[in-house]
Image (cartoon, rainbow, N blue to C red):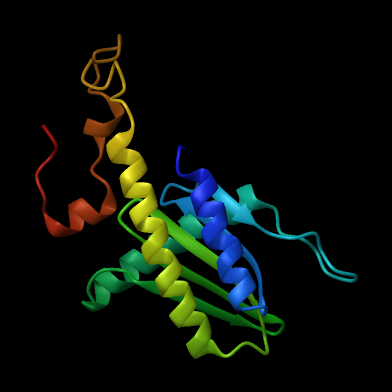
Length: 169
């Protein structure tokens, strides 16, 4: 993705502003890594790998969407997990991406949310700009040889299904 360098800079900037954030990952809602800033593990700690973390983020995102839907709480915004040693915070970064932050237990959670939300907004803008400027896929409207509809027509993304939006033409 053309915006990868800019997204990495956003992640690094967030970690510089909030030193208690020990790692940052931007991923697609499908669980593919867009960019990461996860430093090597410190003594006695394990460094999370980006790809499994992105996949887990997508799984948690699916549960969060369903929980919001089942309880009538509106569109997904963020998910916060507090463990013995710190926090995992996930923020919506537009309709196509998410930001996941790994933070120490001593972080000010209000500051985590403030910086996480701002950075997620900027990442969402960068991803949207990259999608708009990307050339269309040459076979985007062609049917595969097996006669099934193209992948983007088979299943609506969760956000559009929830809103009842029509299938793209």
